[in-house]
Image 1 (cartoon, rainbow, N blue to C red):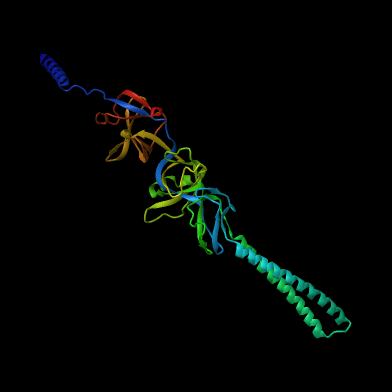
Image 2 (image 1 turned 135 degrees about the vertical axis):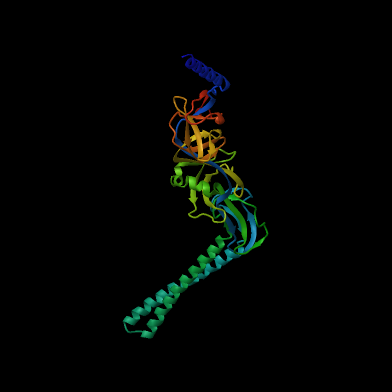
Length: 362
């Protein structure tokens, strides 16, 4: 009996000493990030872009002559058909007057031919004149009519040439640097000035293939897309063209946007930074980057339940922005994700939460 009692006491004493030698590890403390849950993801990115004018027209001379007057100054805004330059029209005016005189003579001859034909026709019916005389009168009338038509065409052409001595704006726009001066001799096709309508401009940029794949479906609804110009956020554009093929050399897709530029904030030819913002239909969770871990089983994070027990959550990273990842995963609203002390925690273990960081604060 004493021997058994001694053994029990000895066992308890050893157990007590062993417990003293290896004390139980304290429960780890952690900070957590409380998520809202999955939300529609907004894609945001910035790309280099180039500004192009919607309309650019080079005005050319259409007739030969000497520039006599200039009605436009470089940088002026002109409307279509505004007067720009005047070519010496003396020769063209004289040509119009000559052809008008020829037309009057032709009309007199036509009236004479009509009268002759009427008289010969009456005599022919009365068998007074021969058939040959009748044919001659008929042919003379037809010739006189054709001559009037021909001279009318010549007059119209001469009047057009005369009108071309007024060099007019072919489109509305801002006048560039003039290419001719008063006294210069021009010929048809001589450029005189360039007009650029920059009240609206195109902005061309390229989407990398990785970004294009993320937003491909969202591009079907252009109303979900807003674009700003870096440092000019009050400008807003709309996508008007998406190329149907990808450039194999650069792995990019060409995109064109249209911007209202009445204040001439953007200048055609300039390079800018374009901010693209697209609301997608994809539901993602926003997590701090420090909450995401890479282990042999993949990309994970640690979540704690209502009992402060640690659980492993596999995630898929879709996008990163600043210090956050946008991820897919089996999350619940208001779930708490561990942010630190990863070496002291393990799945199924308890933790003590020191600080809860709300998503709204980030």
